[in-house]
Length: 294
Image (cartoon, rainbow, N blue to C red):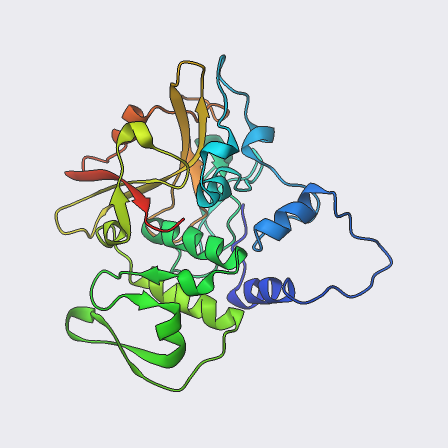
């Protein structure tokens, strides 16, 4: 089971990654894939290898991985996201198994801690990680399900409170330090105030024939309280311009981010845009979305 790390250990591992390494008897392999991934995905915890879309899956005949030059930095970030290997099941934050390894394609390597990391807000988590990994923490701005837009700059100089109908509001407060702990605390508040419906407030709509890694498929009920969210993680294309995608999702309660089982084959996660559009769970409102930031 993919282990949910504690908040303390997750923070320690992230914070220590920003501190110059002490001299050790074993030299760091700066050419190794783990070292290279750690420079781009600070949350990586795998000590000895990295599993990726390229290493884990055989491509359908005639298809290839999309050229990175066709993607924005954020789209490339998502397309190259680390995975867990094929023998890992999906666990919940409560320590129980949600899916056995045969019931999914792959878990995605995104360590988490606590009940805030649900399926509906995982896109915000990935966006926040991307901005941190690029040193762009002050670009994190999230429109919540109700209330004022949440920005990291405002968080550092204000106190957050909740008004009528749990609307997010800010009032001037004691300044906070620009530490990684403060950034992750702010991120958690962003997650806790994200709904299926509010994801659209942070995105533009995108046509199905323009989908790229990092785009979202969101379907929900009329109240925006129940729904499903899938993130397009990777894209293939052939010489005719046809595209296939791999998607990942979470759970109503916090669990390992994962790629569901499709095509009755855990090694064949590839779907067309039309097939993704049918993953709506019978919810009446559905759309493809793209974050406004790249």
